[in-house]
Amino acid sequence: MNLRQVLGRFPRMFRPSSASEIFRRIRDERLETTIWYPVILLLIESVFISIVGFFVVRWLFSGIQIPYEHVFHLVSLGIIPFTVIAGVFVLFAVSVLIHISLRVLGVRAGFSQTFKAVAYGSTPSMATIIVPPIIVLTIPLSLMIISVGLRELHGISGKRAAGSILAVIGVGVMISLVSLIL
Image 1: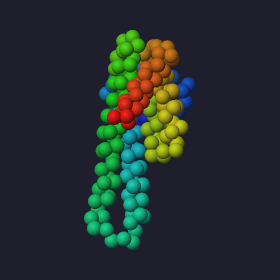
Image 2: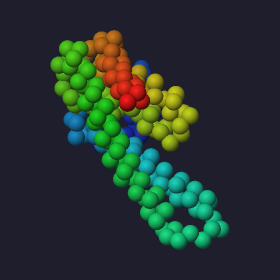
Image 3: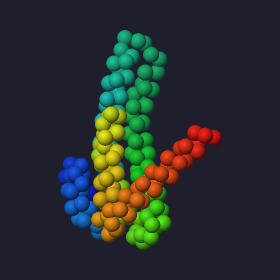
Image 4: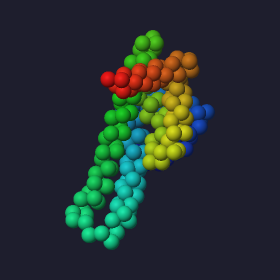
């Protein structure tokens, strides 16, 4: 997968109707190819974060003599590999949890289809992660597009796809509540 392919799919992943068409087209795509889509998006995002971080640190500390100023710049460069590695890890973790919930619901399709749905469906959230007020709006959109992807790639009903996502969210909320109590 190259940058042109990523940028070609990127805007269409914000519309569930277009996403459905893309999911049908990528049904036979290999997992090794799919992984490059989020990696490239996360790489672009982390470079942007690093550039902004570099100038914010300069602006915040302008006029102040700071020992080891270069450390701040190295930290901003360290964001690049961290963002990519953490982002891909989160996508795999979410895919595993959703795939387990699909198995519980009786769906027997492969993991790569679940990962494709999560990787491509998370596009709105990945694109807006650096703007917290907007990410609150894009998370439901991403969940809806992931549901469309699960429906198209696994050949299941929309209710089953939504149920698997809601099951994962429900378990996450319950674990959070239990950890607050303890």
